[in-house]
Structure formats: C-alpha cells, structure tokens
Amino acid sequence: YALELFTYPEHYHGDVESVYIPHGVIMNRIECLARDILDDLGHDNLMVLCVLKGGYKFCADLVDSVKAQSRSFDHPITTRVEFIRLKSYLNDCATQDLHIIGPEDLSMLTGKNVLIVEAIVDTGKTMKMLLQHVEKFQPRTVRVASLLLKRIPGGATTLPDYVGFIIPNRFVVGYALDYNEYFRDLNHICVISETGKLKYKL
Ligand code: 5GP
Ligand code: MG
Ligand code: MG
Image (cartoon, rainbow, N blue to C red; front, side, top):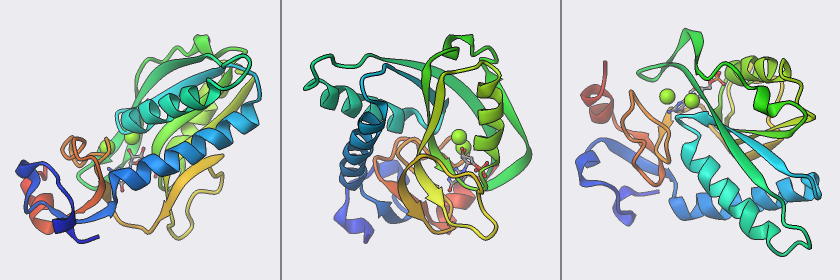
C-alpha cells in the first residue's frame, strides 16, 4: 500500500518503504483466527505462551478476541498467559545461535492446553526448537498460532496450526516486529526502506 494513505510515527518518516498489512486488516484477521481457535478448543481452558518480544501485540489482540467471542458461551473459557523470550536476529539476518533468554522453566504448562503465540515463522527453526522445549513439560495439547508465515525456498516443514497471513520472503517490521529493536511501535506491518536499514543498523 502507498505510504501516504496511512498515519505512522513521524520519527519513522523516510525509514518505511511501504505498508504491507494495515492495522485494520490485521485486526480483522485476528478475529477469524480467534474463532478458529475456539472452535478447536471446545470448552477447555487455554494456556497461552506468548513468544517475546515480537509476539506481544498479536498475543494481546488474539487473547482479547478469544475472550470476547467466548463470552457468548454457557461457560466462557478462562485464558492464562505466560511468556518466553527468544532472540536470534541481528539487523535483518538470522544469527546461528538461538537463545531462550528466559524463563527456562515452563512447568506451569504441564497438563494444559497450550497455544504458542508467535509473530512470524520463517525457516521454522525457532518454532521447532521451542516446541521441543515445551514438550519436555508435558502439556496436554500444544498448538501454534503465528501471525505471519514466510514463503521461502526449502522453508518450514512443520507449519503452525493457525496462520494469519502468508507473506513473501521480505523482512517486515511493525506490530511489535523489530529491526534491532526499532519499529515495534508501528501499528501496521511494513517494509523498511534502505535509509531506514542504514539508520538503525548495528
Ligand atoms: P525462523 O527460526 O522461523 O527462521 O525465524 C523466526 C524468528 O526470526 C522470528 O521469531 C523473528 O524473531 C525473526 N524473523 C524472521 N523473519 C522476520 C522478519 O521479516 N522481520 C522480523 N522483524 N523478524 C523476523
Ligand atoms: Mg521473535
Ligand atoms: Mg527481532
């Protein structure tokens, strides 16, 4: 989408090339995902594991929507949210080592219906590693929701159970996704310009 159609923080003017997915479109899609999740979950309660930092906005909006839609049930479901922090990227490139920055102990997931909430799945390595880690704590069920899935050659083999949007192989920011910690405060999912990349390069 052409940039001039949207408002976005003034400090990023010149740093954004285009709006890839406008905020309103994201919110609409999340409502559908929440419905799908509730249909699969039935009347069980939900234990959400939010993958920080990139997943925080998606997680908040998804949980809000799940709760809002479950209010019409005879027994509205309860949701609990836990967090895990992972780190792998420098600039717009994946680094070899992926770290769980914390917490390591996920014993609160034992016996629960767990929904892992991620902003983006690219090669799928992060999701695979996280799933292996989560399984150690013997949850009852595990599902994964990712707002974005990148279409890349030889990409992820295990796919998330819920996907918001399938996108081409471009580095995107906004809606909590970052480039060296910048651009998380954009509401829309955007592509950054060469100027933006240089300005915030490490
Ligand atoms: P994967 O392990 O699937 O290759 O990479 C997943 C992680 O890489 C995501 O959790 C995210 O932190 C980061 N990542 C991958 N693609 C992008 C992108 O286009 N933009 C941003 N901001 N992060 C990305
Ligand atoms: Mg991340
Ligand atoms: Mg990042």
